[in-house]
Length: 382
Image: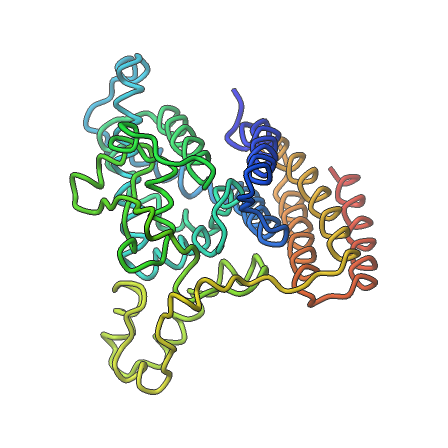
């Protein structure tokens, strides 16, 4: 049976083809939603998320399996592998996902992981692939009810992948309202609201497949064409660095926790809603108020043609390396897997540094040559 990583490898050409079609359709309509640097930044974060997941699966799937083996209240695999069992498991997963997603916006430590998905100021299919590399640290907790209910790990893994893949297509501005479909399902219109920083749209529409959960629990808001969504986060990242994108909110929370005088506040910084700060910390280290007009200004530093060409070449190489890594990861010795992970992560950082002007083309070429030599050594070791 294919691993989750191998399924992602097979899906890669489909993702890229659909992105190309979305881009071409947007150009034809005069509504292009892509910027090269932003798209490569989002895709780099998606790659980093997938290569990180190779090591995180032991935590997420391992703990789920342990709870299933020792605490499941009802073990009946024949039920869960029938068509109605699969459907029920998918609904169960989507319900748990709703609460994980919602808490990812209502608890700072969970937002620190989820923020990666919201940092892009564009909204297109590349944004769908912009995923966190740290979400599995705490996210597995929200799916334990499924293990306790007796959903087998294999069924859990499959419905999790279905739920994730479904959400790819809703990240587009090229599909407008869909009538009755919008009332029941997560759709492009509903999910555009979720990614917006406008006051009326903030923290709404958490559903993965069904928007029904939002209607039931009071978190639904309809898109209003008179107020187009403004995308991104209220504290903009303003960087293409994939490592900093994953670390920025954790670092900000750690700083606030360190500076807080009361011990209770040091803990509350991590648990309360994103943006909450102890009064003494906010007074000593004030932050500017959110300005929607300023949020409309997109981060897009100029990039030379040479840097752009090299970044595209680097990304193509990193993508090919990622496909090889994910396909063989289950059989790789740990030292080799860690080496490949480090090499791919370095390549992603390098291409994003190029796009941000932090690294000259000549130096990037030299570093790329060294990376290729190291990669060849790792391959020979394998």
